[in-house]
Amino acid sequence: MKDTPTPFRSNVRDLLSRADSEGFAVPAFNYSDIWDFLAIVEAAEAERAPVFISSNERVVTDIGIELCGGFGAAAMKKAKVPLIHHLDHCSKVDLCRSAVDNHYPSVMIDVSAQPLDVNISTVKQVVSYAHARGVAVEGEIGRIKGAGIEGEYTGDDFLARVDDVVRFAAETAVDLLAVGIGTAHGFYKGKPEIRFDRLEEIDAAVQVPLVLHGGTGIPQAHIRRAIRVGINKVNVGTIIHCTYMNALRAELSRQGENAYTLDVMKPVREAVRDEVRKWIRTCMAEGKAAT
Image (cartoon, rainbow, N blue to C red):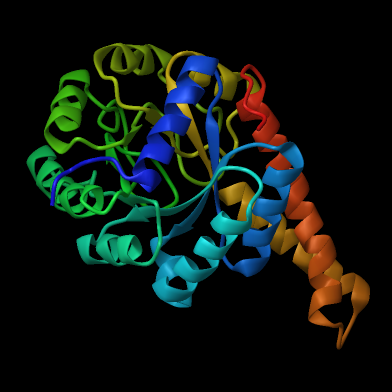
């Protein structure tokens, strides 16, 4: 099948091109279940802003790719803003293919811990399948530190190398590229040390939209600086599920035994929605992203 952009992939590429030209980034929020999923959608609509809404490998494994794909497709059809359901940090080619077949317009294949040749060849398998079906693909080069996802690293061994990024982008034809520049998953131990110089070098070397992973804990000013020097998508996960669980614990304690699910979840959704709205404003602050 010929690799021509169909609406899903074209929509993703057009949105990120707009973000780049207008000076904002599209935020991407990870959800764990239907409650924080709904809160993210509500926040996006309240801010009149485009967002990626992301399920990681564990979520789609536990809930099921068919169910996640189903309510993602329903939300995208109903939403009043651009909403992109995204498979995040998936290490399995077959699961990426299954996401493509279950209405995901965007998938991430992440084998960045492997040698570069293996990373490239694996990503190419997903790109071939996804692009033929009009779906965008995100890859990763370098490594995002922390939280047990990709390991702990010292020195500069986690940083994406510019020549590797150029080769990776050219050989894989990915639509989005996460780059290791010092960010970390989870809460930071100490002050985040982001290599803006490396980010600027990468941005100058490739045309592919760049993704910042590990947004939680990065100061607002640093997020905005990263956007100014090349980031087009900002991933936020940890603070979303922590807000969810802390609000749920507080509400269960307040309402006591035998509380009704919907009564408990309403204020929890509000707490998550408020946190998401803060991040949307951070990512959109310098652009004109409102729909």
